[in-house]
Length: 373
Image 1 (cartoon, one colour):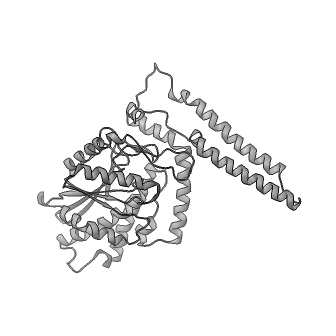
Image 2 (image 1 turned 45 degrees about the vertical axis):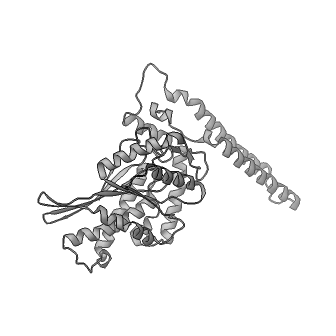
Image 3 (image 1 turned 60 degrees about the vertical axis):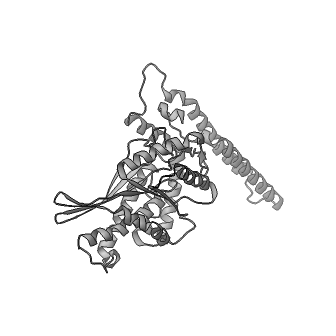
């Protein structure tokens, strides 16, 4: 299993979302499942990538920042550029969108579907599946199995092409990480059976699940792939890999997901700005101009403000804990302390909602293209 990440619109989870004016999307990865047997080579390709619209999700210390659609008047042009290139390289397109159909993600899904309808391309199909609401993944597989059969896979024998892959499944969720990897591993297993049957390794009545060691190997390869891709984009391993590895959710897996989710929150809010600067500098998106002042110096005031605000919050908590220590006090005093603490938490929450972006780590080395988005 080989995954190839695009160098275009590369970056970190919340700092790089959606599409740019050239049709490149964030977290775009081509995954190729290769089967080599005797003198035969078989290949099945899938792709994942951010929803090809202009949208952002700005970190502000909330648990899940709200996605925001941008430049909707120019959305179709960027959408078309993306899929023009997709069709050029891969042929027919089967879109599988796994984002929530209710809540903050729903607006993106509706706009994505609308742009697909506006393009009105017979070689592009759109399938939506609410991963968190619909529990049976076999329903998803059944809904696109016809497309997978139609797309086929590449089969080569001693440099002679016996069959081509005529299309590709393009899967996305909000991050194109956790839900996407579960779905892609499902599609890969479906096609792998056909690959092995075409090579006469398995007979028609066989299934991959009949061979425990091989099935476990397949699951672990896709889970390791998920962790590697997630680490680059979000800073942690993937979520839901217990399902990919075992076929079901486990208590240990859910605990691991909780730890990873909390770690992501810290990294994405407080450290990813510097990581994004590294991407932009190494990949040449930002060019250093010795004649201009350093962007880091221009951003120094923001960093100082963040430090003072954090120190202020910590100091306030310590002072209130010392002055309002209810131990050994009357019931009235304890109630008074509870009210003060509740009020303090409320106003802190309101402050962070309005000024949370001032406390987050944002990139300093922005390309002209990023400044225009």
